[in-house]
Image (cartoon, rainbow, N blue to C red):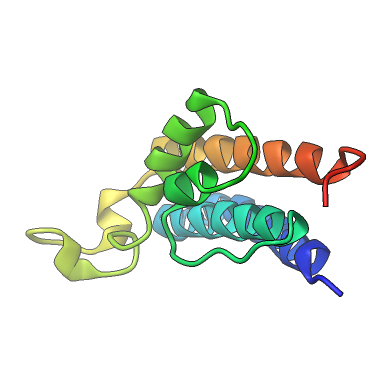
Length: 131
């Protein structure tokens, strides 16, 4: 039995969290949760297609899929990958906290990019004959 659907549901929950964090003004966490949601979604698709995936780089995970992935989606994933570390650690910047370096524009764009990844994965998992 595969846990792909469970992993994808968690990815959807992470994307819901991004919106709550953004509304609360926690833009750094919105960006990180967006990256996490996209990562979990792509790993769900790997499981759905009968393979395991390792790592945290969403663009790489997309490239490793045994199906065609639009180049634009890989570019959106690269945007999300830039949020994996610096959104959580103050020493990612010369000074200040991550909360001081991220704002509404970044969180809005991160949510949009993560939504595109989840939409792609959702469509692939719903396609008959896949997985």
